[in-house]
Image (cartoon, rainbow, N blue to C red; front, side, top):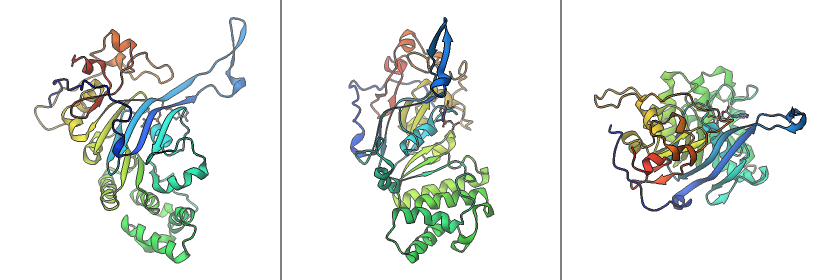
Amino acid sequence: MNLKGANLESAETPTQNEESADSLLQIRNLKKRFSLSGDFLEQLRFKGGKLVRHREYVHAINGVNLDIKRGEALCVVGESGCGKSTVARTVMGLLTPTEGEISYAGQRIDNLSSRELLPFRKRMQMIFQNPYASLNPRMTIQQTLEEPLRLHHPDWNRLKVQEKVQEVMSSVGIDPDWGKRFGHEFSGGQRQRIAIARALAVDPEFIVADEPISALDVSIQAQVLNLLMDAQRDRNLTYLFITHDLAVVEHFGTRVAVMYLGTVCEIATTATLFNKPRHPYTQALLSAIPRLEDDRPQHIRLKGEVPTPVNLPSGCVFHGRCPYANARCRQETPTLVTQLDGTRVACHAVEEDRL
Ligand SMILES: Nc1ncnc2c1ncn2[C@@H]1O[C@H](COP(=O)(O)OP(=O)(O)OP(=O)(O)O)[C@@H](O)[C@H]1O
């Protein structure tokens, strides 16, 4: 893999909407911060003899722009704490954005009330990391799967609901006769199949999967991944797939967005990203994957640690660890620039042909 290469930057500055024509989901300048300072009274401090209000925030996501196209699996990768789950939860309306907009099928959804969001909840479903926590221990599997159907199809009679439950259980490889059992009677892999069945029961078109296999035994992970891929093919699903595992990305992803400290630093098709990573952070991430080929790049060791999201670095958030950083990188925040092959990279060094 040749990490260096000609800079393919296009002369045109991309517009925010350049990818939007075939997008199912659009994320624009999304920011989410969490307060660390408690309520008003807890924020008060004495400074220089005066009472002042001290507020501190975790800047979990800082201006993310993403388009997810119909039928694709967009994987979001990055180290722990870079903001992947916050993106997923904000898209699903489980967190309110601090700034920015999210649109689904052309309609803005980030500012809707729970009632207005209900029709979208049928079309957009989420699968969580931990199948032990995501199933209600007091409900049978039948009840667990009936719940979303009763919410979204109040006009369906008992027989129709039961038929749908049986169909969706079979489709994920769970014996429909096991409907009266409780979640704790199943293994982790089976529980995650049931969680997938619950997401699929209402025939969604878009699924946010947040590390859906990372809590499972390695021997089970491939089976559950294959189930998700089969569901995508059979039901024409679109995925936002959160993972820290690059092997999963290579197997599953149509495109990949790489995140670092709350920002997206590179977006590319999976094949392009693995063959020609542009951003120095992507290069370092990929160089850490063990490969059999002789021409693999040397493992790039980044200096230092990921900075705290409480005090974000100025300029490019990666500059403190980047071997190519210069004065511009320390001052000016790079934006995603489209290369001739469609890859989008936020890096001054790539832009200036310095790597
Ligand atoms: N409710 C919260 N309150 C305060 N800080 C939070 C909260 N949720 C997330 N964070 C912080 O926001 C940052 C991003 O967290 P997030 O869970 O989105 O990262 P991640 O990339 O999904 O990590 P992981 O792979 O470990 O789940 C982290 O610094 C995290 O500690």
